Length: 148
Image (cartoon, rainbow, N blue to C red):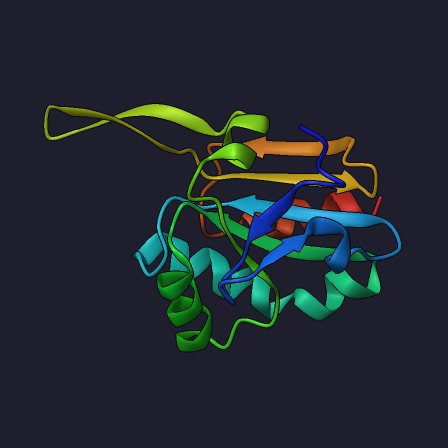
């Protein structure tokens, strides 16, 4: 899949190219399991709090889950999120970045997004990745990497 030419569905219920959100150096793509759940709220608020700092460093932030546009839009509005939210309903981007993992809860086995973050350049080369991240404190790791 060519990430430069593949359109993706966003919270505005429109298809956009990722390049529409391009900044000088690239993107911070963070994948989260489900909008409006406690961990995802904490993580999104943290990214939003530091959003201007990421922009100043030359990176745009894009939040990604498998939620539909209506749910993502409500989540974005409820928490005054300034950055774009991608709705990967068909899991194309999730598969590309290999974030779909088998999980088990109450003896039920299912596939879900493993909370992950990728710093990529404008050609979508991965500069740094974090998997199985915790929603609290992870932002500091991303900022440390960008300050190198």
